[in-house]
Image (spheres, rainbow, N blue to C red):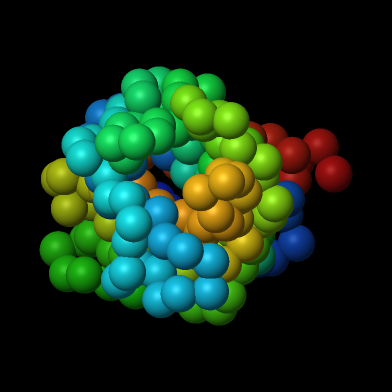
Length: 210
Protein backbone atom coordinates (compact mmCIF):
# COMPACT_ATOMS: atom_id res chain seq x y z
CA UNK A 1 0.00 0.00 0.00
CA UNK A 2 2.77 2.45 0.84
CA UNK A 3 4.55 1.85 -2.47
CA UNK A 4 1.36 2.32 -4.44
CA UNK A 5 0.47 5.45 -2.47
CA UNK A 6 3.91 6.99 -3.04
CA UNK A 7 3.78 6.07 -6.74
CA UNK A 8 0.40 7.80 -7.06
CA UNK A 9 1.66 10.92 -5.32
CA UNK A 10 4.76 11.31 -7.45
CA UNK A 11 2.81 10.56 -10.62
CA UNK A 12 0.49 13.37 -9.60
CA UNK A 13 3.53 15.57 -8.92
CA UNK A 14 4.77 14.92 -12.45
CA UNK A 15 1.40 16.03 -13.81
CA UNK A 16 1.48 19.18 -11.70
CA UNK A 17 4.90 20.19 -13.03
CA UNK A 18 4.11 19.57 -16.71
CA UNK A 19 1.70 22.39 -17.35
CA UNK A 20 -1.35 20.94 -15.59
CA UNK A 21 -3.00 22.73 -12.67
CA UNK A 22 -1.00 22.42 -9.43
CA UNK A 23 -2.02 19.72 -6.97
CA UNK A 24 -3.03 20.60 -3.44
CA UNK A 25 -3.23 17.74 -0.94
CA UNK A 26 -5.16 18.66 2.22
CA UNK A 27 -4.52 16.67 5.40
CA UNK A 28 -7.28 17.26 7.97
CA UNK A 29 -6.43 17.10 11.66
CA UNK A 30 -7.82 13.83 13.04
CA UNK A 31 -6.35 13.85 16.55
CA UNK A 32 -3.09 14.11 18.46
CA UNK A 33 -2.22 16.30 21.42
CA UNK A 34 -2.78 19.56 19.53
CA UNK A 35 -1.07 22.46 21.26
CA UNK A 36 1.44 20.58 23.40
CA UNK A 37 4.25 23.09 24.08
CA UNK A 38 3.95 26.74 24.94
CA UNK A 39 5.88 29.48 26.70
CA UNK A 40 5.18 33.10 27.51
CA UNK A 41 8.35 35.16 27.91
CA UNK A 42 9.22 38.81 28.60
CA UNK A 43 9.61 40.52 25.23
CA UNK A 44 13.18 40.60 23.98
CA UNK A 45 14.28 37.62 26.08
CA UNK A 46 15.26 34.20 24.81
CA UNK A 47 12.03 32.38 24.05
CA UNK A 48 11.70 29.45 24.25
CA UNK A 49 14.01 29.18 27.21
CA UNK A 50 13.14 31.88 29.76
CA UNK A 51 9.38 31.66 30.33
CA UNK A 52 7.35 33.43 32.97
CA UNK A 53 4.47 31.07 32.11
CA UNK A 54 4.48 27.61 30.54
CA UNK A 55 1.69 25.49 29.09
CA UNK A 56 0.35 23.19 31.81
CA UNK A 57 -1.36 20.56 29.63
CA UNK A 58 -2.22 19.82 26.04
CA UNK A 59 -5.08 21.56 24.25
CA UNK A 60 -6.99 19.95 21.38
CA UNK A 61 -7.19 21.67 18.00
CA UNK A 62 -9.04 21.32 14.73
CA UNK A 63 -7.84 22.35 11.30
CA UNK A 64 -5.85 21.15 8.33
CA UNK A 65 -2.46 21.17 6.64
CA UNK A 66 -2.35 21.57 2.85
CA UNK A 67 0.68 20.52 0.79
CA UNK A 68 0.84 22.43 -2.51
CA UNK A 69 2.86 20.01 -4.63
CA UNK A 70 3.82 22.20 -7.59
CA UNK A 71 5.22 25.25 -5.78
CA UNK A 72 6.49 23.15 -2.86
CA UNK A 73 4.66 25.03 -0.12
CA UNK A 74 2.42 24.27 2.83
CA UNK A 75 -0.63 26.15 4.12
CA UNK A 76 -2.15 25.41 7.48
CA UNK A 77 -4.86 26.53 9.87
CA UNK A 78 -5.02 25.30 13.46
CA UNK A 79 -7.79 26.41 15.82
CA UNK A 80 -8.07 25.64 19.52
CA UNK A 81 -11.17 23.69 20.53
CA UNK A 82 -10.15 23.51 24.21
CA UNK A 83 -8.57 26.06 26.56
CA UNK A 84 -4.76 26.14 26.66
CA UNK A 85 -3.97 26.76 30.32
CA UNK A 86 -0.86 28.76 31.18
CA UNK A 87 -1.80 29.09 34.84
CA UNK A 88 -2.44 32.78 35.31
CA UNK A 89 -3.87 33.08 31.80
CA UNK A 90 -5.37 30.88 29.11
CA UNK A 91 -5.71 30.88 25.36
CA UNK A 92 -9.39 30.24 24.74
CA UNK A 93 -11.20 28.05 22.20
CA UNK A 94 -11.49 29.85 18.87
CA UNK A 95 -7.89 31.08 18.98
CA UNK A 96 -6.57 30.44 15.49
CA UNK A 97 -3.10 30.21 13.95
CA UNK A 98 -2.40 29.94 10.25
CA UNK A 99 0.09 30.45 7.44
CA UNK A 100 0.13 30.43 3.65
CA UNK A 101 3.04 29.50 1.41
CA UNK A 102 5.54 28.04 3.88
CA UNK A 103 8.39 26.77 1.62
CA UNK A 104 9.10 23.04 2.01
CA UNK A 105 10.92 20.11 0.46
CA UNK A 106 10.15 16.40 0.58
CA UNK A 107 12.61 13.62 1.38
CA UNK A 108 12.15 9.82 1.51
CA UNK A 109 12.11 8.05 4.86
CA UNK A 110 12.17 4.51 3.44
CA UNK A 111 9.43 1.98 2.90
CA UNK A 112 7.46 4.44 0.78
CA UNK A 113 7.19 7.02 3.57
CA UNK A 114 8.49 10.55 3.24
CA UNK A 115 8.82 13.79 5.17
CA UNK A 116 7.67 17.29 4.26
CA UNK A 117 9.92 19.87 5.91
CA UNK A 118 10.21 23.64 6.03
CA UNK A 119 13.33 25.00 4.31
CA UNK A 120 13.11 28.78 4.70
CA UNK A 121 11.69 31.36 7.12
CA UNK A 122 7.98 32.08 6.87
CA UNK A 123 5.42 34.27 8.60
CA UNK A 124 1.93 33.30 9.70
CA UNK A 125 -1.04 35.02 11.25
CA UNK A 126 -2.70 34.59 14.61
CA UNK A 127 -6.04 35.44 16.19
CA UNK A 128 -5.44 34.63 19.86
CA UNK A 129 -8.23 35.00 22.41
CA UNK A 130 -6.99 35.44 25.99
CA UNK A 131 -8.80 34.84 29.25
CA UNK A 132 -7.28 38.05 30.65
CA UNK A 133 -7.58 41.54 29.16
CA UNK A 134 -4.57 41.94 26.88
CA UNK A 135 -3.76 43.97 23.79
CA UNK A 136 -2.23 42.02 20.90
CA UNK A 137 0.69 44.07 19.59
CA UNK A 138 1.87 41.69 16.85
CA UNK A 139 -0.10 38.84 15.29
CA UNK A 140 2.24 37.74 12.48
CA UNK A 141 4.38 35.08 14.21
CA UNK A 142 7.45 33.57 12.63
CA UNK A 143 6.95 29.95 11.57
CA UNK A 144 10.09 28.50 13.16
CA UNK A 145 9.50 24.87 12.27
CA UNK A 146 7.10 22.76 10.19
CA UNK A 147 7.42 19.02 9.55
CA UNK A 148 4.94 16.38 8.37
CA UNK A 149 5.55 12.65 8.06
CA UNK A 150 3.50 10.78 5.47
CA UNK A 151 3.18 7.06 4.81
CA UNK A 152 4.61 5.94 8.15
CA UNK A 153 1.39 4.38 9.42
CA UNK A 154 1.22 7.00 12.20
CA UNK A 155 1.41 10.26 10.28
CA UNK A 156 1.85 13.56 12.08
CA UNK A 157 2.44 17.25 11.43
CA UNK A 158 4.29 19.54 13.81
CA UNK A 159 4.31 23.33 13.65
CA UNK A 160 6.18 25.79 15.86
CA UNK A 161 5.49 29.52 15.74
CA UNK A 162 6.71 32.60 17.60
CA UNK A 163 8.14 34.03 19.67
CA UNK A 164 8.99 36.75 17.14
CA UNK A 165 5.83 38.34 15.80
CA UNK A 166 3.46 37.08 18.52
CA UNK A 167 3.57 39.84 21.13
CA UNK A 168 0.97 41.16 23.56
CA UNK A 169 0.65 43.80 26.25
CA UNK A 170 -0.67 42.59 29.60
CA UNK A 171 -0.31 45.91 31.43
CA UNK A 172 0.44 46.52 34.21
CA UNK A 173 2.24 43.15 34.20
CA UNK A 174 4.31 43.86 31.09
CA UNK A 175 4.81 43.04 27.43
CA UNK A 176 5.31 39.40 26.45
CA UNK A 177 6.14 37.13 23.51
CA UNK A 178 4.59 33.69 23.01
CA UNK A 179 6.13 30.54 21.56
CA UNK A 180 3.75 27.70 20.64
CA UNK A 181 4.17 24.22 19.20
CA UNK A 182 1.36 22.11 17.73
CA UNK A 183 1.57 18.37 17.07
CA UNK A 184 -1.38 16.77 15.30
CA UNK A 185 -2.29 13.48 13.68
CA UNK A 186 -3.27 13.43 10.00
CA UNK A 187 -4.92 10.69 7.88
CA UNK A 188 -3.37 7.30 7.26
CA UNK A 189 -1.87 6.54 3.81
CA UNK A 190 -4.88 4.51 2.63
CA UNK A 191 -7.13 7.53 3.05
CA UNK A 192 -4.58 9.79 1.37
CA UNK A 193 -4.33 7.43 -1.58
CA UNK A 194 -8.00 8.04 -2.30
CA UNK A 195 -7.41 11.80 -2.09
CA UNK A 196 -4.40 11.70 -4.41
CA UNK A 197 -6.17 9.41 -6.88
CA UNK A 198 -9.13 11.77 -6.97
CA UNK A 199 -6.90 14.79 -7.54
CA UNK A 200 -4.99 13.01 -10.29
CA UNK A 201 -8.31 12.13 -11.96
CA UNK A 202 -9.35 15.77 -11.88
CA UNK A 203 -6.06 16.76 -13.48
CA UNK A 204 -6.50 14.24 -16.29
CA UNK A 205 -10.04 15.46 -16.91
CA UNK A 206 -8.84 19.07 -16.99
CA UNK A 207 -6.12 18.24 -19.51
CA UNK A 208 -8.62 16.46 -21.78
CA UNK A 209 -10.89 19.52 -21.77
CA UNK A 210 -7.97 21.86 -22.53
